[in-house]
Image (cartoon, rainbow, N blue to C red; front, side, top):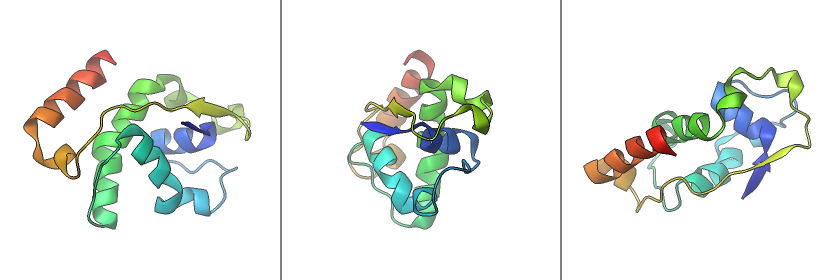
Length: 112
């Protein structure tokens, strides 16, 4: 799937890009990116979403787009997009409950 480069940059750096609107900075705005990376992933609450972001999404995006971590916000044009492919599917809470899933995820972070 294609996503705004500014959204991916924001998730990677932990800073909202100035060109993102308020909705794009909400959980609802980021959920499609989470689902693209980790199809089938579940989280119970806002806290759970934050945990998925911290433990899965941010490390995956840093692996996939290492150049964005150090890129100044003004170097990204608002209309730019990046292709975000599936990183690792999760059957519900597998990302949290399965040591096999965690092992595969860590392996992908090193090799992907």
